[in-house]
Amino acid sequence: MNLDSARELKSDLVRTVLAGLPEALYRARALAEAARRVEEVDPQPRMLALGIARARKGDFRLAVRLQRRALEDGPVVDAIRRRARGEVDVRYIGRVSRHAPRRSAPRWFQARQRPLLIGCSIGHYRITAGTLGAFVLLQREGQVRVLSNNHVLADENRGRKGDAILQPGVYDGGTRPRDRVGGLDLFVRLKSRAANRVDAALAALDKDVDYDPHTLKGLGALAAAPDLPIEDVDLVDKLGRTTGRTTGRVSAIEVDNLIVAYEEGNLRFDGQVEIEGTAGPFSQGGDSGSLIVTSHARQGVALLFAGSDQGGRDGQGLTFANPLRDVLAAVKADLLT
Image (cartoon, rainbow, N blue to C red):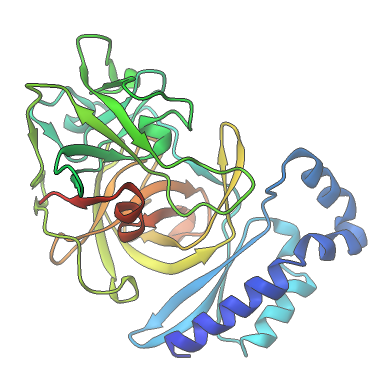
């Protein structure tokens, strides 16, 4: 189907099917007990996400992402298949979580970097570690800021303006005051009872902290954010604190009702980008905050924030990211290139 048809179908299903999904689960005898138990524990239970997948250039499918096994062979998915006339890409992705860091062999991106480099370890002094995504310019003041996730720089809404930001992060040996590079400046608050679109925060650099806003180590130089729409982006790369340089393919866009596990509970995200690794996983824990760029021109397209352990090529999981345009609009800044 064409993109407009896919968008219209997805919008209609979000309004009709997703809105009534909890009640449908209650009515299903085999699922009733589990559904009620989930609803009692969390107001944002994992169920089903809907997006748009590209079959080939100019041809799209409805992306159905199942986060609960019990839905796989149920009437809800059957009804969606019929509405889409079989033009669907159905995957079980299971639990999606914000990327907490994992241990790996120390490499440059986990070490102390001066000047600061895109892709290196960074984090609020109370968290473990995440990734420095990029440098941006505030639209009003023209000042430089570090861009990463809320859960990397602001400790999931718990941070306060001026809190120490360390490079490398604590998990990689960062300590105060030796490794302080700046202070938390602002963050987009994560909402527990409404849909989120971005997981983003900015840090102000301390005086005399040198930084390199251009170099993508091993990839080349960062270009401007692209003019091409996200539906035309195919191959992408990223530099991250845990897995370094990886290549992937955009497997779905405009993913709504994606439920992501955070320390404070499940949060809903709409309008997300899904990426599948081309050779192993595209990301792992600790890569949160990574800037995702187009493989051909190194243009920034998305900010990585979460991943699943299932649903990707050879069971390697999927990565989820906020569209960079949404991120920059939310923090009122422009990508520094």
